[in-house]
Length: 190
Picture 1 (cartoon, one colour):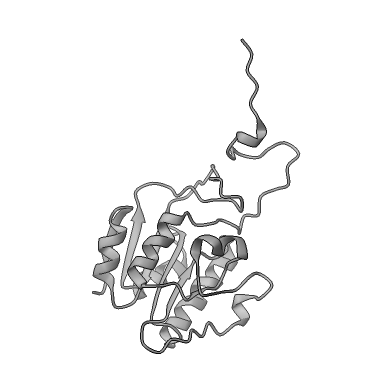
Picture 2 (cartoon, one colour):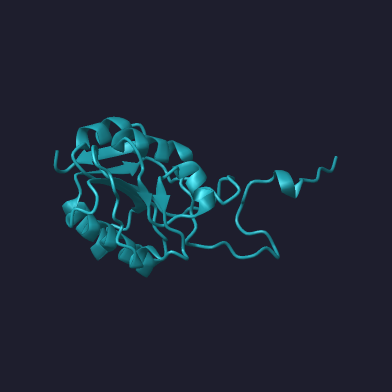
């Protein structure tokens, strides 16, 4: 018996012959992680490296698209009575990721926002990863690779790297309690 598969019902498995090459900087975060980030921080006020499609899941009050160029923005978040919170899943190509992480930490250290979480590959050998590790309040190393989503909500297979969630802010215990379900969490500064 011969069976044929419908392309419309297939998830992404590698590359489809003749298909446009996937944008290596567009890895959409699955909803459970942004929901957890929102539980820890109370809200997501800014997502600096996003799109209208990604923001349907992230639900940030404000987000910057590629056209807005987050590197040229000041990341100022306006809140009066609670913490200003930033979620970041940066572009993953080497130099852009390094620049994004450095921008995040510079803005956090300058007091532009109060609390933040970012998700990156666990590139422990890089200078930006080491800087983040030395300055964060907590970090989570998921027990398995994350199946990121494409713009249409389908999981993208082929993730070849593990990830890390870095937490900056005053709620390291809350971060631990929420992100412990995903893997090993280390509190560096309570």
